[in-house]
Length: 336
Image (tube, rainbow, N blue to C red):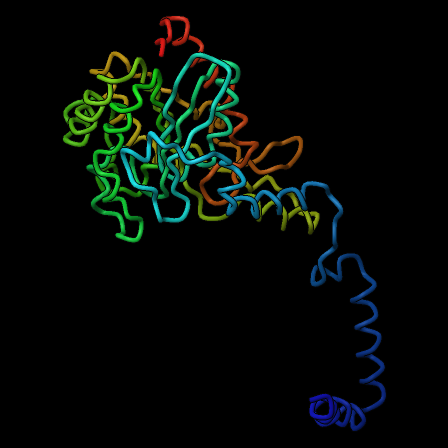
């Protein structure tokens, strides 16, 4: 192999170079020397930066794939009486014990997996048990899972949310998910139009069923999706000493993705006295842009093109705590 490479190098490069005029060889040598020694190689060679956020953003992107490390909870025997232990990757029916009095079921698709840490932190010292029911892609409102690929095995979850709350009787039901992309939530509607929408009617029926078993239903505003990974993009730009100003989401793009589903949810919650909407856009968006990273640290708020990083989840904690504590003050937790 080495002999073959040496032969090719001689025939294709060295032999031709020997036949080239001396002044051309000299000019070529000087040109290469200038190119390599000039700042950032005249833009061809990238300058390597030592900004601390480079490695941290790379780690954020890498950790996004490690659901088990983030979730860290044990399978719950009560939940497994309702639904079999899932075989799909990233699916969990598990629980956490705490020192408090409140019981909560936190459920959703893959977004719940990344946000469970924030829910636990918001309920810190107040929860007796937090149940987690999460499966990638599958929606809590199971009637809207028909359009999803069978690989997600969402049919196994049909009516399971209602069965979970009937079995567990939690004080809180907390829902988070991305709805953009589902055809039933695709068409734009104002809040007024949503009040007479068929999807809204189905949502209201789901909430009516679930309300019978809980004291409060908290619905976190759905999440947007981007056409690139902010964490990886930031690491790349910072390593090249390039500005990061363009790593941002236009607010109108955010609204275009979120409002069709959010307006329907808000309209459905109008007939649900126990429902509490948690709008999060104001935590990320100001004026006409929405943050994708922390300006001071340059750390991404997202670990991929949609899911929050730990830094994004941390932005949710204060409003979650506020909404949860307000509800806790209004009821006396049930005694076992």
